[in-house]
Amino acid sequence: MSRTGTLFIISAPSGTGKSTLLTHVIGLNPQKRMLSVSHTSREARKGEQHGVEYYFISAEDFKERIEKSEFVEWAEVFGNYYGTSKTAIEKILLQGKDVFLDIDWQGAQQLKKVIPNVTTIYILPPSKTVLYSRLQGRDLDATDVVEHRMDEAVKEMSHHTEYDYVIINDDLEQAKLEIQSIVMSKRLQRPYQIEKHHDLIKKLLEE
Ligand code: ADP
Ligand code: 5GP
Image 1 (cartoon, protein in one colour):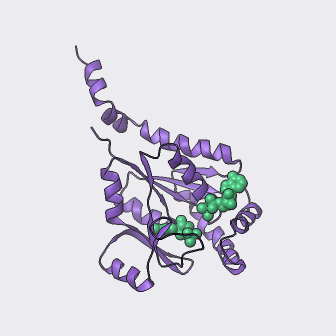
Image 2 (spheres, rainbow, N blue to C red):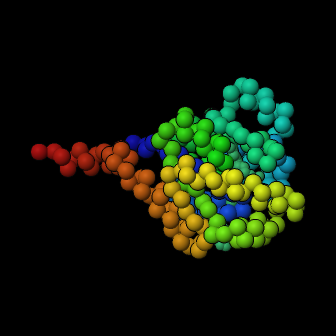
Image 3 (cartoon, rainbow, N blue to C red):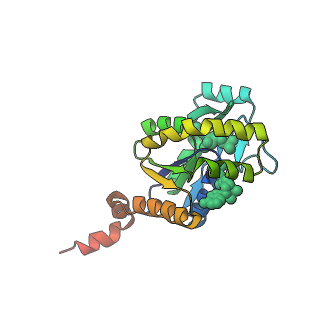
């Protein structure tokens, strides 16, 4: 029997370490875990590929898709549109896989209304100074973009109160352990265990 997939939302200010932690936790069980690939109207950065990091589309195309209700959630972040396609998520969930969404607080709020069982995780940096240096260290954005993202970080972080779990990404190994523990504890909840071990439980309860 195939298990039902679950959804995990990971949010954090840009540069906190979301991608690093997601790559790790998905890599621990790549057959059963998948990252949802969002659509965005942002320009692709050097090295980013269409369909891998994002589906890169124009702002016009994005707006048309909003009109057609193609997104389960969408938001404007740093002046660009970002959104999660409904069909992509459904496909992964039907395969019984866990889906991980790297989305902002606006998207998390929308998704929680549609899928109440979603597990939400907020990642905080150990300090603003560290966040700044990680943002710079990624070497992905121009200085003005880094400054803009730092300005937005405080507003973004104030939403951590809306999440089920909070991880402080200071020591990377500790943070990796914590994210894996959250995912595992979700899987150990009774409804998932009953579904997964249906035959065993039936046998155990036979008189
Ligand atoms: P995000 O996806 O949140 O924007 P990244 O995963 O790209 O962030 O991480 C930003 C930078 O910080 C990367 O260079 C990454 O290697 C580094 N980084 C992530 N977590 C840690 C950590 N716990 N300690 C030190 N550096 C980290
Ligand atoms: P970046 O431009 O650094 O890839 O992402 C910027 C921000 O957009 C991050 O906070 C990321 O979580 C958020 N984001 C990425 N994809 C989506 C999405 O599909 N929906 C929403 N709401 N936010 C997203």
